[in-house]
Image (cartoon, rainbow, N blue to C red; front, side):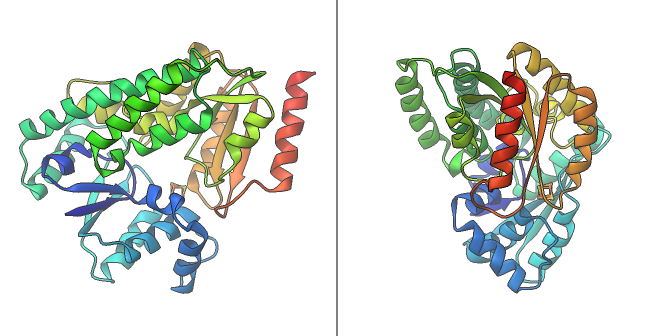
Length: 323
Ligand code: SF4
């Protein structure tokens, strides 16, 4: 069965049950994203609702999915209404919650519930986790080739990490392609860039942001949330893994990770990205307050290319860093 999902959750459970998990965000952004947004608006989704939500709605309706897992706590409050409109279209929806207070027992109960739903045991799930952790280990190598050796571009890093949310539905094939990529980049010469940037926030809806930055001699050597999707901590215990995952909890958990990676990766500045009409824009107040290197905030709205105003703001920010 094909099981869609709205954001990263314990994907091991779906694999253990022999199904294919599909990250709706990835299908949206690599497909005809503008058309997906338009279709949802045609059905009545308001203009002032985030494009990702509209995109996911249309992706579900146009895909061959057997059910959708909606992360209704720890991601996006809009997911509640997204799930309701999908239910109304006779799509089976399965809610999953990350408890805001990071309560271990509550998270364990959510995971138990999902395992029961899919009829799998914890042992089976842990076997899958072991298999996926081998691939995650290779993604850590890819990340190191980015920040330690400057041999992987910010865009490549972004794509590999973001796709590890569902391993494109086929971990074996994902690993094969990853091995070939790692082999290829080992022999690359390091890129000559002027600045090492971090990218904070949800993955961008803008296609050419990383390319534009590279043209300006900036490599993004830290993709914060994408790295979180790749579950880089390799905890032995499933519950620990999803408690260390910072994205669904408070911005203070994110800040702890961000501050330590800024230091470790010797970043010159960060871009704090947010999506128009997203509640996470409010988190920028605290990011700007607590991150102690220069921060440029960028907002994306519709899928597509960087607008002239944002390009100008990036150029001015770089001038400020240079002089
Ligand atoms: S970008 Fe923000 S508003 Fe949009 S789906 Fe993600 S969390 Fe929700």
